[in-house]
Length: 264
Length: 264
View 1 (cartoon, rainbow over the protein chains, first blue to last red):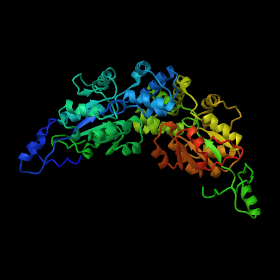
View 2: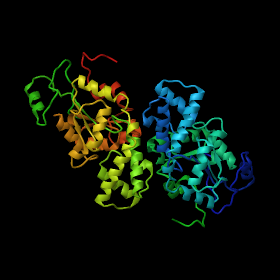
View 3: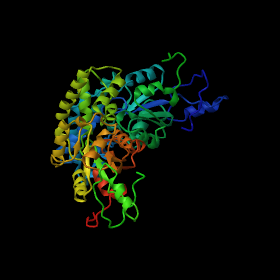
View 4: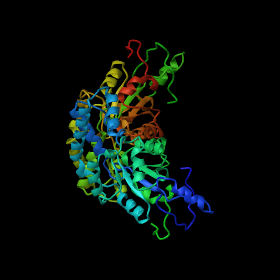
């Protein structure tokens, strides 16, 4: 984030930068110190905004077992959040097996069914709704980018009390999911910001690897069950417990309080 | 483990040291270099020998929810393996609630029931049976020490193909469970070895803290879902993926192959 610079106190800048270099041009026209737009925030969904990772892990165990694939549960956990195709490939490497495209599709369907049976126990993570509300109130742009399909993301929006208009990019909309950067690049484009000016927030190393490849700042959350050091090693600039903890420390990632923003 | 020293090649030593200093006395009588007994191994159960941590995590979530306690699942995961009393205290600190002893007992019963409904999906971890068989064949003493109750440990022995005579210490048999050292001290006494000559193998930081307090060498396994660095920071001398990986690297923790032990 070498291009991030201090925002002059009291300065008002456009909150939207187009994917072109319009922002740079406007800076060149001013005589004062350089200014950047306020950073946008791009959120992963499972384990970052909703508390669904462990249910996904055991749903995958159940789905794989139906196809005779026995894998240690922690190995499934450490692959959650990556693209479904890469996920199955990684797990097959562990078992040294092979599957046809039809079988992979059927396993994904079995996982969706097994997760559906566990969905009633999924809750928003602490502070998720408050964090998104506050960003909206403050005019900080944000979007959600998930390796899951739209069919899984829509119920999650309901859980978070978000409308259908929420900026959301799902697996179906890009060619490659995480750890490729495509999801975050598409999410930044959707809300009209440069991905290199965005902060990616995620709970898995796949989010953080994708953030690095996109040139975005990565922030890790412990709420998906990874350890702090795993997230730091994958490139997290800062690690917080969950959305509530991030909300308490937004200043540390460069989100400035509006003077009208009540403290506490 | 400053007292551990090279075993002279071909030397035969007693595999059992009494809790007194009999071993030291016999060394004092010899003119040659000092020798120690072969180390014993003390194993945690859940997440170390059987793949049950994630089922326990969601069973706790279900049990706590029945009592109106909503907690993020990753916070439950990071407390698994500690004493049930400390576990509930730690979770109550998170929720700032309070419970009567009767309620704590009822939550523990609800957890046991919820885990029972998930037990059919629990498997031995890769290499667990092979590792224990090999230690037995090699005359390396070992025992299991778990923060769980005997009622949960006995079905786990069946799963591992172990008999009722397996050296086992459960929660019911000590005053304080992990991270207090009592379970590992009792397990060492049960098989007649000094705990300071033992290697504790566990998947959680509570195992490793208990190992340090007992003066034993701690070895971590990733199979309970903690990160490598978390285990190292808690004092793990080495970290392996699972029992199969430990079996492949027994030499690294000072378990020497018997010359008659087939390679591979």
